[in-house]
Image (cartoon, rainbow, N blue to C red; front, side):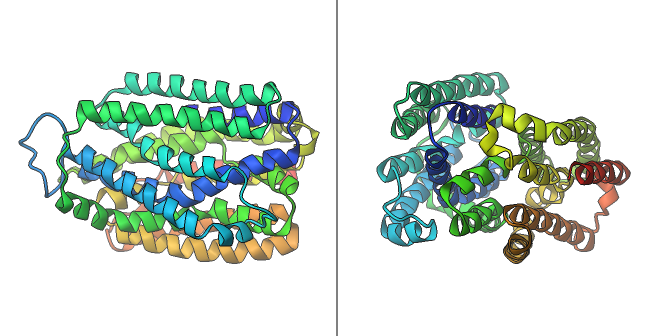
Length: 421
């Protein structure tokens, strides 16, 4: 919530300063490229690391003290960062043509530094999670993202231009990386293990592929809009193409926290019951919040941002509908039970659906059609996982999904959405 909150506040500040819509578009392109090239493997590697921490075939659980798993996970993340930089350097020109850039990618050198430092830094919060230090995680989050907001937004307020805004972003990322090194010195044992790295990659590669395909929707959306519209329209789309952060973050955090429970032998029925119960609690809280936000989004967008982003509200309302699929967690069961192949293949189907429907809908309804294609694709992906869990694992949806509650809330949300049109 702190990470997304800082990004949203920065976006608001940008629209209230002298930055043009085109300059804001260049910032969004910077963030899009960095996310496109790194988010999928960061997510896949960290998700696959969680069930392996102190539950792997390489290191004995009888060795207390500092963790060799953490050290090797850091090495893997660093190696992928270097590989990403090499790919970006080699494919710079094709990437520029894909992003419809008439000249070089803006702030390219800063982009290289940002990707190298930012990707491994995500490990910090998971060290706190695995070491059961929630207070330390909150302190880290508050301080880290407060500094990010102050450095990036102050450059815009002072009229220094987008270069200094992104420079501020790189500075705070450097600080996060230094803090990660400090935590590794405290909690990790420097014992290089090709065997554990191989185990990590074997278990993790389906999740990397799944994350690449499953999370590619936002990047596919961005590509389509960028290839057919100017940077200003791209900025309008990006400001609307955001899920309700509270839904996205609470759903992802909940799913991540439940994964280790499904990896414990003999705990399946209890884990399923807890998954269903806690999902219901999330629904009672998040669906009403989403309904309120959907009703008032047309009014809020011009106030929070400015009149240029009026059209973003309609796109945002479409993305709010993603809560219906977000609050269903068959993938949590699959990852916890190490059925990562099924996770990957469902994401292949999701990508195919997203490409097809987003393109067709864009021809019919413009940039709003791109968002509708993404909505369909996410629903198909979750449906495939539900069918697999029911068919192969013999776990009925009703055992982990509050079906009646989900149905009622979904119908109400769809009615409100149609009324807002």
